[in-house]
Length: 193
Image 1 (spheres, rainbow, N blue to C red):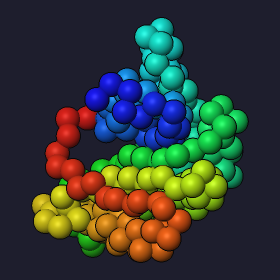
Image 2: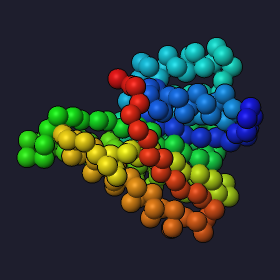
Image 3: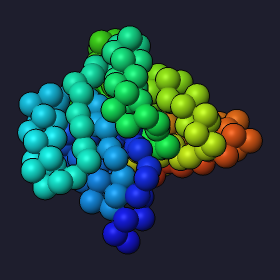
């Protein structure tokens, strides 16, 4: 598997921690140039320093994925760093627990949808023209088992991850003509903070 992503440039959201970090590590260890974006600035910068010491092509920029301008600036920085984007992995996400729908505030609902679903829309809208310009590539959106079979007390999370599935299906249909594969990965529980 070593080198299987050689010559590829990949944007990874949520790359400082959890699934995003593991994905970024895997891609970089297998030859990809990885540009990570997300909110966890200290962890992201530490990861970038460790990766550089290990000779891995990973860079990080702190980006609020709920801010359209910040997302576009992050994508621009990735293009500036590596000259192209061949793929994007949308791994950033938040998980709220313990509230039924009637106990959930508008702010809690809005934030979960903004981070887990709308951010994917914004990142893809900014990056798809670059992937198309390179002749095609791949989009991977991280969804969850909660999109299909959930547990009590996570209404916004379950709705957001079901939305990721629907958005991914639509994008796959719309962008196949551009040689862009779009997939949603349905993950189970992962030991992150």
